Image 1: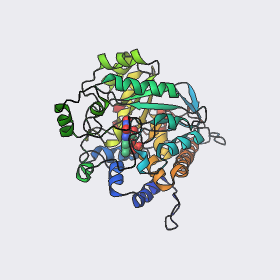
Image 2: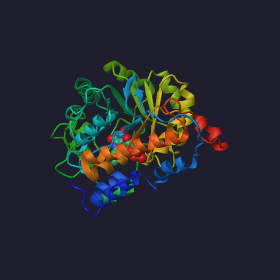
Image 3: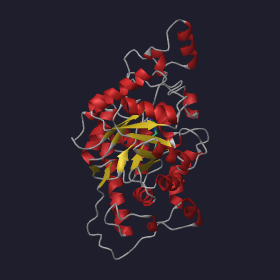
Image 4: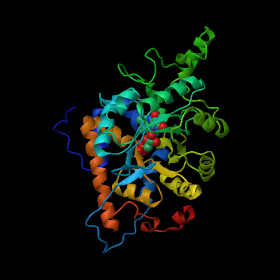
Length: 386
Ligand SMILES: Cc1cc2nc3c(=O)[nH]c(=O)nc-3n(C[C@H](O)[C@H](O)[C@H](O)COP(=O)(O)O)c2cc1C
């Protein structure tokens, strides 16, 4: 996908968004860009970063700055990783494959959405042999469907499962409702059988009434009408996952100390503090504001990551200062894809990486480990969260 000569070369992540806006159709743009209801949380995810102020230290040797870190014991070149976002082929025809190649080139981690438009086996094929790929999961009432996905992910070489827990039902996204959003042809949800149909609740009821049973994948996947098993509980869901997989389990969508403690108690291996990019419950606090209480609650027993609103190197720095082991990017990846496919995602990652290095140098931190809460202004509001 060539870049039109009229479009400037992006120099920051907001430029990628502006360019993507000009390239995507309304249906795809709205699906990617908007959030739930009044989009308070969507906006707050970004604004909350600007409320945090940095406290740089000077006269430190920052002639060499290293962003190297690790995820679940596996080294990665940078704490900037890729969040699962559905249906990437709407942004670029190579979709998740382009993203996977960019992740490999950067030696960083990619989480693949269950609702990818490229089959999970095809995506991990682009690994550089070392960079982590994790598989994001929604659990279905029909557990064999979930189990098969887990086994496929395991066989293909994914190294962890990311169970999204903030989506027992789908948030109300007004633009999608107005557009009657549907994945346009020829794209399809490639991790599911070819004959899978996206059914509305009423179509589903009609199919059930006509004798198609809940055990058929067609019905059970219930994509977009009722994604996941809304009946999931701590006592049932994590033990079930443990019974079918040996992979580490990361919970995505935890925002409170209570749930963080439960995640530790149930033996989860990590938490992604996230509000689903403001697409689920509108009015919840910004992910960066929820991070400190989750970090405090897990007391270093498991790794804590965050996503939501990361657009600048200083945002990454602030998240790490508050205890995130790494951050994940949702929409910026889609904007990179829309801008220029694999190359666009690489450029986006490079810019953010360079900005992180700059923030580290200007704050006096030569390594990721050196980044601590002391680099943030301790306002009464922040102190109350730490
Ligand atoms: C278009 C879109 C699709 C998404 N699809 C999924 C998904 O399939 N599974 C999931 O766990 N999160 C999904 N997310 C949420 C992201 O993983 C992530 O939490 C969020 O985008 C981070 O916020 P950011 O976009 O501000 O970086 C999606 C987000 C977007 C924008």
